[in-house]
Image (cartoon, rainbow, N blue to C red; front, side, top):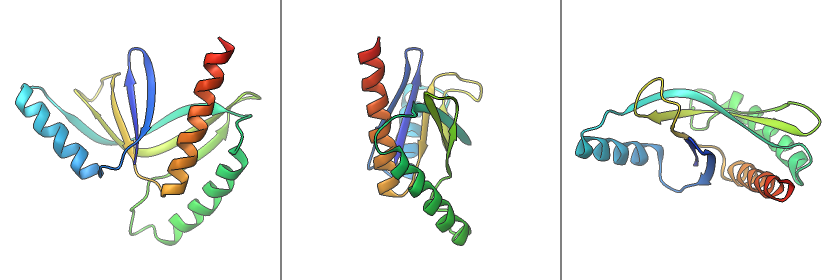
Length: 139
């Protein structure tokens, strides 16, 4: 599963082995113990990766085959939707369908989680890391 954490300082992406159900259950227990509210909803998230990242063509091929396998087993709905869209010469937008977990429905900070095929998750995560490393080097 991919977990995107949105904070006032930016976005952090990580791969986690916990299931969505376990992660939500843990957050519910934590919110109850702290006396906080918790909002969980189906949602979409997006972030940018470098259009020049090595392996992007491989991910594009995976997205095409992933999309084909999704349409064949749409009733099972075990995987989330992944889209790639060219933004400009420098960046590609990665769009994901998943679950938004936050303190309220209109919160700017929170956690977004999605489950994809393991190889697809790995490539998305690796490309995001490359893009982050490039951003640090170019600043």
